[in-house]
Length: 142
Image (cartoon, rainbow, N blue to C red; front, side, top):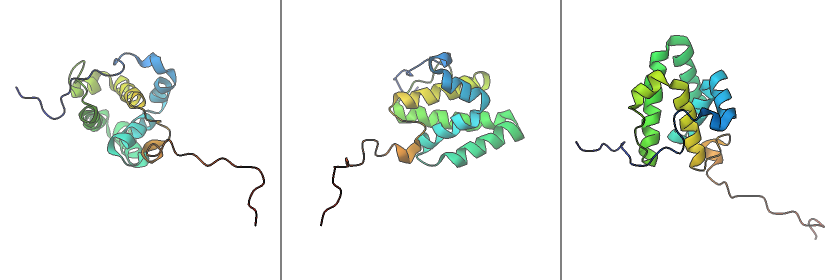
């Protein structure tokens, strides 16, 4: 069987059950999963957090959990494709069905491992090395 473009050989930076390796992400996901999802989706989609966060919230809390599982699978698959990650420990749908919040945490940690500052979002991570020039004494002179 030929590998699809989403199949990779690289392992995830942390396991699915390593939620306590970053307690702040774990707590954020338990109490506000839409924020965890939105921040990750913004980086994965190279777009804005608000749209993904709102859609996830609507799907997860208002309609039913099943649509948010499908929506999450799409993003997990994109993430794996972008970084050549293995589909593990099982396929994306099963991971989201049985370990939904753990999957969100793992994806968030993976993006942090890839070097993203998740609070800064996609645009904020485009020029992370840009800093202001130092202020020298005396100011402007005529």
